[in-house]
Amino acid sequence: LREREKEREREEVRKSKPMEVEGSSKKMIATQAEMVEAKVPLAYRDQCAHLLIPLNKCRQAEFYLPWKCENERHTYEKCEYELVMERMLQMQKIREQQEKLKQPHKQGIPLIPKTANA
Image (cartoon, rainbow, N blue to C red):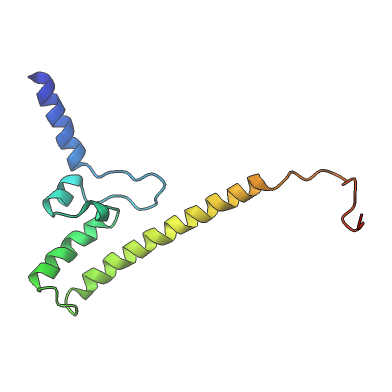
């Protein structure tokens, strides 16, 4: 029984604590429990979920009228854009590192100069 109680306590602490995302400058603000309560789909549970929760509440309250909730939508979309740009920059750095590894190591003096059409 004690083991089960300890496991439940650990699970509650894990759900109430924001998650850390490796390789990202943005921190997770919304907890797992908050996202479950707000019924945020799994695909949208990223570092911008804390902005999506009030946006969805506003959308439901305003019957999804496109000219309502503009400030909330703008802040959420800006956050998502920044995440995408950060991932693209990381991918570009990875590709540059791979290109450096693929290039043959240059030796001192080549045996056959490139200018010789032999």
